Length: 218
Length: 390
Image (cartoon, each protein chain N blue to C red):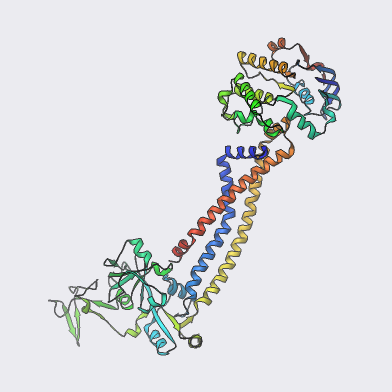
């Protein structure tokens, strides 16, 4: 479960304020964060993953309160328990598709088992990037890069998945494939998904959605 | 392999050209002082052996270095000649053996060294093929001259004309190659050895021509016993068995010019006595001990080397600073990449290690190239130094 209680955040020297009194995403559930550009969606996402520290309040991922962890433990927790799909994909162009997907595992403490390896190949097949397995990330199209970024976020089987516009570069067919994959994943793995999106067509797929502008003031 | 090392390796491997350029630049600044030292040491070794094996040299007063370069390395220096009279006087002292050297002519780029048979024994030069000089016009070749030009005993070699526009001057002499010497790794390998008289023949002090009296219409005039011939008399440019007797020298041989004399004193006392004979500053001839002159030369060379190394140290400092700047700029350009890794959960230590490994890989590659470069210079230094001294 992801829960936010009395969360308050402001950038120093800015009139922007973010206040979330209460927000909960249960295990196996997904939440869509909606709102126009610049409203603070990414800021809220970064607060929920511990990449930003709130001025007050608490973000809990399961039983772990992020604000009570020090920086080192937060990083370690993120590396093992959190999956992040960045808006700009954040792939390393000099690594192959395989190396990009396995990057969190490589830096993590858990060794890559044959079963996990097999599961990752299955993931790549489902996202139709398995044929690019040995290609450098820099040689891929935008849509392919986005699918690699999704595979990387899921590869280490995180319990908390945060995705920033994960379907922005995909065509309609692949967008459905990705959404099916994400929702299957949270069901099968008892995970939580929080996704930032502009795409109104996708909103129907989320039982819960929040407008970020309801939490912010300027 | 640790994740940090793996990531660093992948980045470096992906950017091969940039890495090689940077590593190559680092290798240059590392290898340059090493190579300079190797070259100076090899030069010192090559020159010291030759200088140490030559007890004393006599030549015209002036630059001792010029005398040494002429007599030991057969480099044609602007050295005034001395006469054979000096050799006769040295031999007259009974204090030494004296071996005259005449290093003024050449065949293409190789020096022609006029000397006496003693020289070969003194330097320990042995024949690899053929025979020693037996008569006027014969020569024996140093090993490298023979190899480089593909010459062998029985072939012929022309001396080069010294002055192209001097029609009354020295004409090329066709020399008979009698033998090729065993290589000894010194300047001797690059020389063409002839008898001293052959060197004088090249100089024009001796010549051979048709019998003036026997040649029809050759006499221009006869004055007080001297016969003046006209241009129809053929001059010989080659010594053969049939014309050998037609060659003759004019004037007093004691006045014939040579470049230097190798002096081998009988003992230490004789060496000191000989040195004393040439002390007077008014004496147009000087005697030097090559090993001492060489030490003086090396001392200057080492000072220059120290200066060059100091300048190189500054250059190395600047190059390393530039390399550090290149890395700093590269990491700055990639700050988004490192921020992403940090967001994923990679620790700052692992990120710093990744950067450190990249620097170390490039540094190690630079060292490897520098080591290869230094090894290559070390292997080739002897032949380069020989070429420089030739």
